[in-house]
Figure 1 (tube, rainbow, N blue to C red):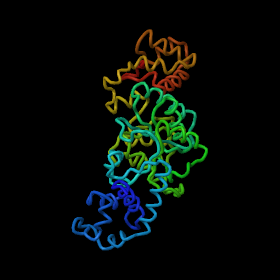
Figure 2 (figure 1 turned 180 degrees about the horizontal axis):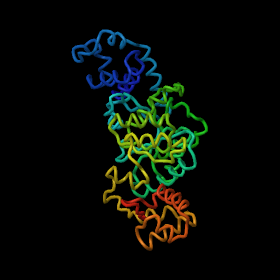
Figure 3 (figure 1 turned 45 degrees about the horizontal axis):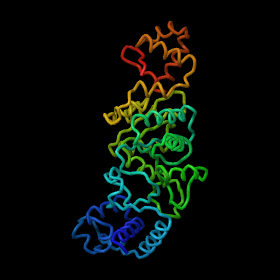
Figure 4 (figure 1 turned 120 degrees about the horizontal axis):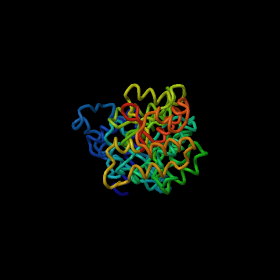
Length: 373
């Protein structure tokens, strides 16, 4: 057995020792430098780690955990799954910074979990057409601005699966973080997407094979989604939901959090609007907003805003195109000038301007001026 395999076994075993937990396991490894040494020198732990008591030493004398870990190693080797221990150089470095980071991860795929740019996109399982359109538009834009970005989500219904679909459609690497072991896919209807992701992204979990997708596992999964990324993006959310938990976790990890706004009357925009109202997320209207806010608009992505935006929205309605044409011809205009120049009633103009703003075609300047991007 290699040293790496031994570390994998002891890392898996440490997750199964009763009474240790995520934070406790991470502190033990931080103090002893490896899971192997945690078990090997368990009787010496109090000398090196003052907080360790006799209860922990007794708990680490756990042959059944070692046996189960050896069984899991056979499973992952047979299925060509990578086991990333906490001291593995390929372990996501962003996640390693989090106090409650898992000490072992199981990964199948080809994504770079330490990619230069990583975002997660989360939201309601009851995605509306508005939310799915944001996924489509946002990732199409982002591909042009930042083609090496890794898109993370949870393979769940709604916004999650649409984020994965659109990432794949735009040839962006995408990783699904699961709330169960890699011996299954849940929900099963997303199995084909999960398989497609193995060729451009992958599947990641902290759970051993045989673990059911129980409710509490999804909350645990959310901390990985938040911790391994530079930014969390909430597309649509009700007043309560898993995506808001992910946003809170991101804030706790000092990660950037963004949210797309929606109408106050829309049930699945209330959570996003709440995040924005409480200053727990920054307003996001387009991929350009994200790239600028994150400081990713370097010379290596020398994409002209105008060419990106115009190429993405060739399917504008007749009235939307009128507004675009007028702004292109006359420059920045207020709503009254747009109403006169296009002969569109003011009540309808407001709705059209909102839609164009959501699509990232225009933006509002000081003084109520609208500018074409």
